[in-house]
Amino acid sequence: EIQGLAYDEAGGPNLDDYPFEDCPAGVPSYLMMGMRPPNVGGVDGDLQQARFYPNGLTSDEIFALHMNSTAPNYGTQTIREAAGCLRLQDKMDDPTWADPLGNPCAWYSEMRDRGNDGVCTPTVATPCPVACPLRDSC
Image (cartoon, rainbow, N blue to C red; front, side, top):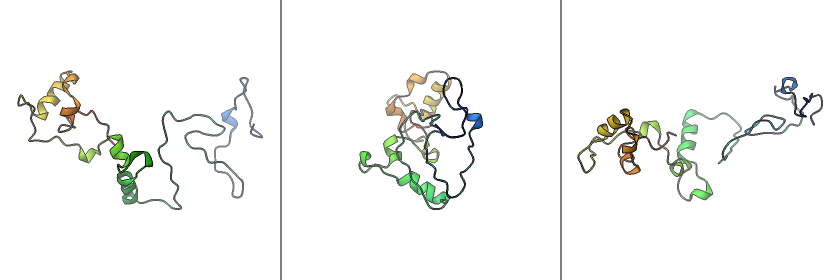
């Protein structure tokens, strides 16, 4: 129970009375990730990594972390590679690719526009990530 915090009839904290501003210097506090005190909210999923830096990062440093961060359970793959996502700038259909029937990526895009999403398979999505976006963007 948090001192000075009113509780509602169900026994939960009345968040309207909770001071969410930063604590004054010298006052001990807890770091909560994915929720707000007192244990409200939560994350639907897994937290893969958390890092703290003594100062703000530049956009180049953030990009380098995005491209190169690894985790022990992914072996030599980066987290981005293991997730199978593509950066937006990497999403470009191969203009030279065609399926065995001669259909290029543009044909698959047209079929999807007509509501035929089933034409896109993982085999087609590799050379045609824009026409067949089966992989998420990072």
